[in-house]
Image 1 (tube, helix red, strand yellow):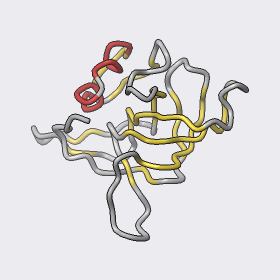
Image 2: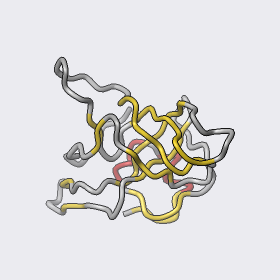
Image 3: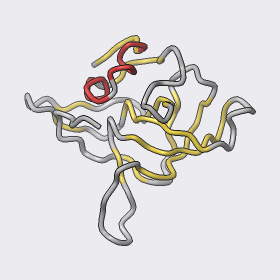
Length: 132
């Protein structure tokens, strides 16, 4: 994975619920694990914008429900700081489903996504309606 230019504050942790904002069929995801997380023993893994996460589908299409899927966080409520000093925060926590290669499973993303996600996953930026 490519590095992100901003100092991302990790606002979500394992067990958090996130909205799925693409048209893949899932609507609500629960974070099970954070891919690439290295931390202290007994510490709960946390993640932020641009993190690759492994989720369980809690609500959505009956074919997808209860499946374990990969996703990327595209919005978070907790504010984070960019290099130019601007602090960014969104109204909700949201993610987009991806496959093993890091390409999105859906064809359209609802709402804005962070530009840090596009830096790391350029294919997600191609289907996004708005990048902030």
